[in-house]
Each structure stands twice: as structure tokens, then as C-alpha cells.
Image (cartoon, rainbow, N blue to C red; front, side):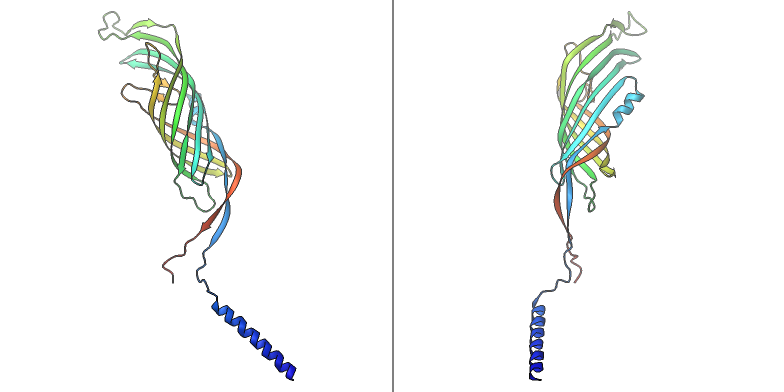
Length: 258
């Protein structure tokens, strides 16, 4: 009996110590939910869809553009476009054609863009704002031209023909800055559909003697009144994951709760 009594006393003593320690610990009634997951970083490459469509629909146009971006941080990307275009156009004055010309060349655009869209947990869509510096190297061929004559004395039905022998002007170039606003939506796993609109300002423009650059690949039409231009693209691209970074998602407790 004494040994049995001693056993119960020891058991009671241990239970008392355990309950005392448990009461000194703080109980968090609103624990913060922390989840850690891996964000994918890598290269996204694709093509512009509008230029092949215009190539099919317009006999006077040919164009192709590659697009790409590389993710630097959670929100920041390096972006680029590389393309080639050829366009034949006519400059009309009234009812008569003054110039018929063809511009052909390549261009590259480099810059950065910031994702302003707050994705749901685990999503990778983007609404971006950014900029580009663009450079184009091209040639221009004057297919034919007429002399402008407002009196129409010698040619009442149109302007006097100057020449219909093509004249090619090589080693032309231009550069410009672009403000770009766009979006990218993930259609399927790693497949993205994108669109963007661009406001461009011409910075430099090397022109041939006795003629003007009327259309610049990558920039579009050039006018006397303004150095501004507008462009757009629609792209489909594939994201190639290269590595992952851990991101910790914390949910702040609602301050209204007790």
C-alpha cells in the first residue's frame, strides 16, 4: 500500500507540472496563414500574329516579328521585339499619284516593362506598362514619281511624269522611343496570348538626298506634321521555365476580428 500511494503522489505531481507549463504558453487565436510556393522564372518567346495576317490580306505588305521577354523579378521584365517589314505605298495629291515607293528593312526594339496586375495566388497573367528603344535599318526604292504642278498647264488630267525607273536608296536608318501598354493572359499551361498598343516618338531619321523617308519598318508612316506614330501587336508565346524562386505568401489577419 505505501508503494501504491507513493506512485499516485508522483503521478499527481507530474500532471500538475504539465498543466502549469501549458498555461504559461500564449495561445494564438488568429494564426497567420503562411504558404510557401515556387514562382517560375524564365524566357517567353513567340510571334506577332497581326503581321502574317496582313501579309496574306495585303499584296503590298510583307512582315514578320518575333517577341520575347525575360523575367528579372516578381514584377519586372526585360522585353524585346525583332522584325522585318516591306511596304509599297503611294502618296496621293488630290486625285493624282505623286510618289510610288517601297520601303524594306529590319528593326529591333529593346526595353523593360512592369507588371501592374495583382495575380491570384499561383497565377501568371500580366497587365504591363513599359518602354522601348527601337532602331531600324532599311532601304527605300522610289518606283516612280511625278512633278507637282498646281497649274496643270501641260498636263490637265494629272501631274507630269518625272520618272518610272526605280531608284533605290540604301543604308537608311531611324530610331525612336516607344511607350508600351499591354496584357498577357495564360490560355493553357505556359501558352500566352498577348496584345499591346504603342505610342512612338521619332528620335533620329537618316534620309536620302532629294527624297524623304515616308515609311519606316517598325515605326510605320512618317508625316511632315509630327514625329509621333502609333502601333500595335497581337502575339502568341510560349514560356520556357528556367528556374524557380520561393515566394512566401502571408495573409494579414482581419483587424475587425477580436
